[in-house]
Length: 244
Image (cartoon, rainbow, N blue to C red; front, side, top):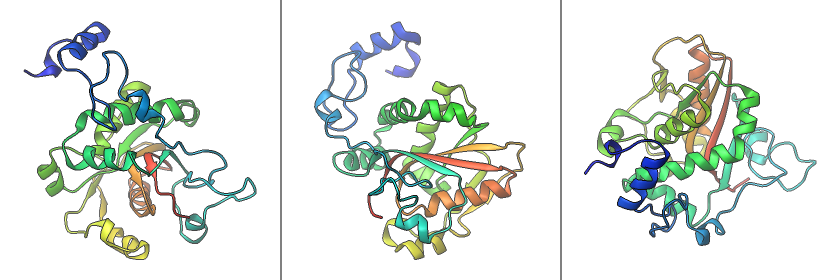
């Protein structure tokens, strides 16, 4: 039975919760109908990013007098500012890996809601013309069946009534896995990884990704968006690495 075709609207969602009990996006246990996307025990285990934060990437810094984290002090950032929600730490790490590699597409609802609840007011102030998910290469898309960043972006776009554009930039298929490389190697690896699909008449874009690590991917996407005609790029992510 395809749950997406049964009912729509609030009543339909409640009925679907009874037919297909929702599972916690962290521990995957069944949670009560209407209880949201995460159980109360797991919610306590999340580590939100707290002020003070880096003026660029949004990572926590040690002092209100510190404007930038060590990474942003030494590495060029073409985007304006970042808005990460949580620290990349257990049990969120396992949840994001399951979301990306184990077919847990339903976890996107929790991730999109977390971004919306934390930053929707800020995004409305920025007035992005479009939300753009970080693309994955076609081979991964075929193998995995979905782009995890696009799932989050579409739900966020629906909540905020902002168009989602997945057609502006493409990703090459011949780059090495980022997790195997040093920060410097990641920059070189991604230098030509993204290309412009078309020119657009858009001034402000909000990039969406699941995890921000060194910032190499967001930087490469930002440069591609600038080439496409976008003037200002911001990013948001579910999680950000804790290294400075």
